[in-house]
Image: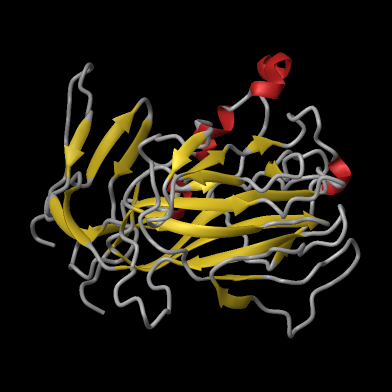
Length: 348
């Protein structure tokens, strides 16, 4: 502690503005995840008030900032020609927001969608209850015709994550319910691989019903449906998990997803001209569940400093934990926006 010196200033106009604290490197090697779970999210389908008059054609959910990745790239869903894993090209129709289609019949799908999730808060429940008046992303069996529908994610890079799952909640209800699959692809124009294996909750949970201790996800399978999962318009939404690290298929030697696009593909139910609008497939609260980050980066960090702001003296860039260096300053939060400033006694 012999290097400490007292700071002295004099004069009527003297003012201490800032003081840099020595003993800390300006570059450190730290985990730098880059992509967090909230950087691929699809959960907010709220129609802005100024768009109510254009409700039937509103596609703002694709570029709503709450639904974007870190680079603010939008989702893709419009009528297009898509090749799926070498199969002949097919027309893919877009997803809509509930209530937009003039022929939409609410008793053939959920009455309500899911509440928007708070930032950095992602559910772990097998089912989520409906939230009154919440819109949702959906497709409906079209006029008794078998049709393909799809949405495509923004470009994502999960290379440095060891554990990586896609999670979303779905509603599949109606007498001629179809089936859905999840793909990953290097292209956002065509699908260049097989469907991924997924696990999903396969039971219908109505209002007032509870899960049991034995309830769990079903799978792995490569598609959910055909045939309905939910059995009424009031049921809870069910969870789907897609392992992006591996399919688990022994015939596929290397199918880890690192960089590219996620596709959700729905094939509407079989032709049924007598009941043409008898099924809905809905999507809500889609996110990534990431863990075990394997990358590290050298990043520049600001050295700790002391600054005088008005009548306050503030420390900036102090480490949040004891660095184990004798005499080094660090902070310890005790709630609110303030912290204790402590002096390290060295290695413990």
